[in-house]
Length: 277
Image 1 (cartoon, one colour):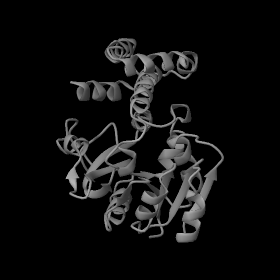
Image 2: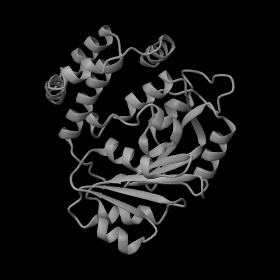
Image 3: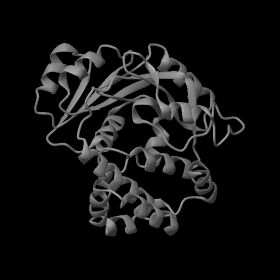
Image 4: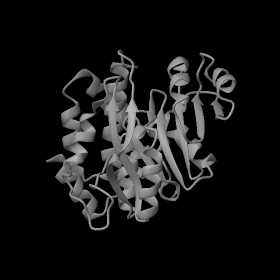
């Protein structure tokens, strides 16, 4: 395929990554987030066609993806993780949909998890279309996505500045989804676009991940949501240790978040409230 590039962000998952890379059917840009397990060298040997960008340190998944999108020279970009890959015909379907719907900035597909290919609950929820399907849209409207199941119009991504790099990794998709919608782009779920996710039996980062997710949830609310939503979010996450840790971490970025704060258009905020209900 010549009109879509797969951008993969990775860190210290060499063996799983090598298994996934052989399954991609489109050109790949791999951004190695400071791995110390020989990832970059191993990929260069096994997959010489993959463009490898090695960062000196872990800049976070959002920053890595931003670099990959900037280096891509195709109109569409698909994201994949080091434990995911796209079904053989998924990207052809996705780019055909995006070409036919020029107002759509992002498609998120269904995610099949594990060797048994279970439907991810997030995909099931999107398919139920709580926001409906707007006229002219290719599928149910969404205001969130899993990065490993997203295909974007590169122009739309760049228009809103891509991922907010200060959020690092975990939960960074939510702010980008809001900003794309605020800029007037449609975000849609496409059931026929399939991504496979094969997570390890034991997840990575554990409590640290939950703490980072909590921090990013709070900062995202501070950056875009009304004060009442921010207060309810802070109250909800302060009920356990990881939440309190995330609250403390977010407090360290309070000044930055307030300086970058801007309210969403009324229709986007209303859609978020509908999803919350």
